[in-house]
Length: 316
Image (cartoon, rainbow, N blue to C red):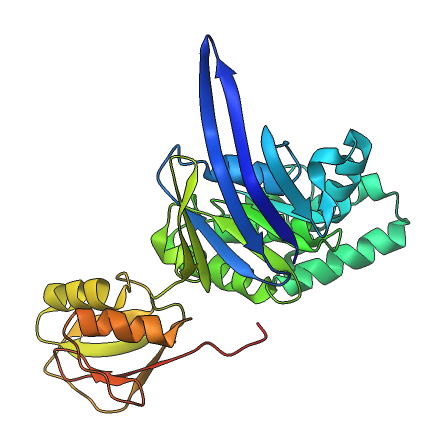
């Protein structure tokens, strides 16, 4: 267990009014989990992330990180935990414009007082991990938005933290870059705990577990029943707009999520496998939509394309 929250509240004073950002949150997150936190604006997502990152303390209740009560730690201890235990990724890349990609990652290691050779080694390893080793000498202005966010992720990983906390990490990216960053964050789980706060339901669906907040409380917590993994394929359909609606409403797959629907008579044969974290939930969702699914989790879309559902492969 990496996080355990019991009855956590967080309130603020706004003039003569008391604002309750979190109102009694109970939550457990295991080491190595990949969790998405969603909810409307004002639901408490960012406040929760700040508490998980030891940037703030609860007003009441208990918050434990790896068995340690964060509310009982002194500021010096919290600073050490933030430096070594948690890596942060934000919507704004927050890169130093005059430093190269390697320099930005090395800068995150300055407070640890490592030798220069060790800083350089870690920076190269982290940039290689996010597939930017060949761009280490480039300034942020020479990188695309997706590449800048990958540098920011490499920077978050530089101190070798146990937890990565990401706040709207794809908010400024196009769809292609969003897909790449979503895949990268997912690949970090297992060895590290990854918690992503997002309004993007497509990004949230890439996490095996989704926690939904509303009015400062946990409204739902469980496995996503949406498609979370898919190799890009073309599927011929008679009516593209109707097919998009079917994939969205029945499978929870937003347009552009890996399937390209093109005009045609279809089907061309073959089979497309979609990944869902919880097969039983997916089966119930299909049944509720009136879609038949056999014992091998095979089904047919309205245009005759054969689809199969399976659990994601473990370990990455």
